[in-house]
Each structure stands twice: as C-alpha cells, then as structure tokens.
Length: 337
Image (cartoon, rainbow, N blue to C red; front, side, top):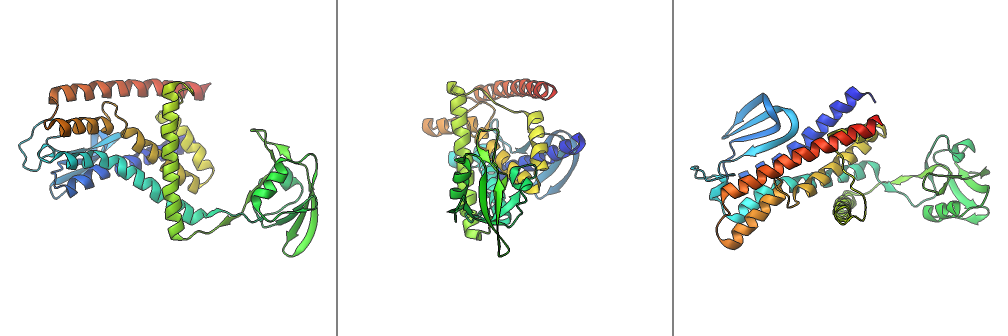
C-alpha cells in the first residue's frame, strides 16, 4: 500500500479513536447534567463546527487529540452546572468515561470481527492453503479434509498439527476431496519460530451473537492483561522498553491493512484498548492522574490546590510531548534503518 493511503488511513484511525474517547467524556457529562461548552475532535485551527443545544461540536486540523470543554475543569466556575459543581463520584465517572468508551468500542469491534470471521474450527478441513509452502506444492486445496497422517487417523485439528510438528521427514496424508480419497506426500518446512509447518490454515466455524459477545469480552480482557503485564515487565526491566509513536503506529496500520479489512478492524480494536488502559494510568496529564486527584479530594473532603494540580498536569503534558518526539525519532530511525 502506498505511503499516501497509509497516512490517510492512520489519520482516520486516530480520528475514530479520539472521537470515541471524547464521546465517552461527553455522554457521561451529559448524563451527569454537566454543561459542555465544546466537543472537539482534533486540536489547533478550526476546520468546521456546528451548534446543537448548549454544545458546540468542532473538527480541528491536527489529529493529535481532542477535548470536551466543561467550565470548572481546571478551577472554579460560575456556571451552576459546571464540572466543579458536581460531587466526586460524578466527576470521576466523567473523567473515566473516555477510557471506558474506548474499551467498550474495542469489545464491539471484536464482536463484529468474530461474527464475520467466526472461530477456528477443530475439524481437519483445510480452510486455506498458503502459497509457497509444501502443502501448495503438493497439490492440497482449500476444503480438503485430512483423515490420517502416516496411517494414523486424525479427526481434530490440534492433534493433526501436533503430528506435523513432531514429524521426521516426509508425511503421507490421507485426504478426502469431495468424497474421493487420495494420498498426498508432503515434507514439512521449518518456520521462523522453529516450528515444522506445511502451510495450511484451519477452516472457520460460525458463532452465535451471544458467543461472539462473550468472545469479544474475553479478547478485550486478555489484551488488557497483556498490556498491563508488559508495562510492568518494562518498568521492572524484565523486558526491554518497546514503545511506538504515531509513525510506528502508521507503519503497523499499513501492515494490518495488507492482511485485509478485518485485520485492520481488529487492529483498531487493539489500539482502542491500548489508549483506554494507558489513559487510566496515574501519570500527570492523563485521565488516570485526574482520577487520583479526585480520589484524594474524596478522602480529604476538599480539593487539592488547583494551582498545584494544574502545574503537575502542565509538567506532565510537556514531558509527554517530549517523550512522543523521542519515540517518533526512533520510529523514523528504525524505518530508515
């Protein structure tokens, strides 16, 4: 895919992710009867806007963020329905709403993907033969059912792949092709991770909406757990620091799209989970930090000095931008290298 279309799709993806995040803040604020002055996707120069009710909805030029502007966010306001006029639980809901909506949206995308793609079937029916691999060279086709390997009957896909991985030399596969039995000889090759493969992918089974919802929830949970474990391992030095900025994400977008629309859909879901979890971390300038200040206010029964909180968020934002510049530099250096 060309660089032009990679950039366009990356910008569109960021716009969608930001829109979902800021929509979470907006919907929670409206639900808590908080006055929202402006809802913006993007930062910087105004491209267009419209007014609906009390709120101005804007699209701005730079897809590096967005905001849901409410009086009383960073100080006291005179508006009777300002952010500062609501109790701590309601303000916490509004602050956490963006990240929560990213996680919910990710789960919805996973559900859609599972509804379309289904799940890998345990039948020994070939769903796809990868070109350039031994199976394709031996003449195996999509839809072939492998019934035995070297005379040993197989009826479950995982058992069949285990026999292939443990093989030593050429395999004789008994194949049922539309009711006609035949034998095909295949010599496995070794993949990059050292596993013996012949280049076949299992067929997929349809899933019910209920099962798709369950799988979408579990997938969101598993990716969340993976992100948190990886962050902890990076902090403790168990693994190296591996972060990607906008340029690195753009490169991953190109790779995801090259594998098809559904893979791109799943990639967007993963990005939403990442943004949701990262935003909830207790780091200055992120929503997680604001939640910490609100928790302290709830315990103390009075807020921390607005000046102190504002300075912490400002310094955190500056460091965050500096980190983004450094990560982008290394992304470009890695790609150029």
